[in-house]
Image 1 (spheres, rainbow, N blue to C red):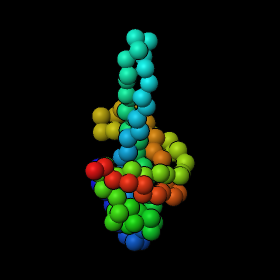
Image 2 (image 1 turned 30 degrees about the vertical axis):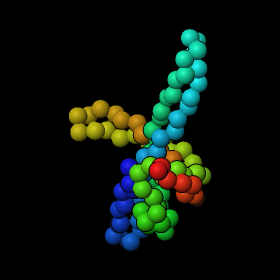
Image 3 (image 1 turned 90 degrees about the vertical axis):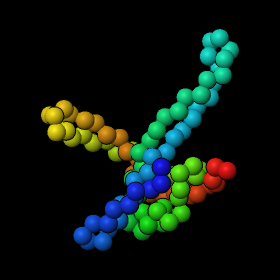
Image 4 (image 1 turned 60 degrees about the horizontal axis):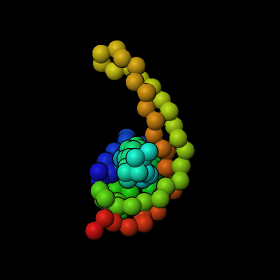
Length: 97
């Protein structure tokens, strides 16, 4: 998905992006299997605007950052857990053509 950007009252910006990673292997029957996992990325500050300007759905990127885990209680009273990669740097590698 294209980055979603928010600007807060203090003009600090936040960009949220979902990326997919694929792992391909052969199962015990010799069949090729590809598993896709989705990861939520959070980018703060000046890099958030750069991400919003440069990145589009399907772009390949390399990221450096840290994994952050948090939790909250939803409207129904259920505890929800969230894992996000807080990006310190990213590089645009290519686009899906």
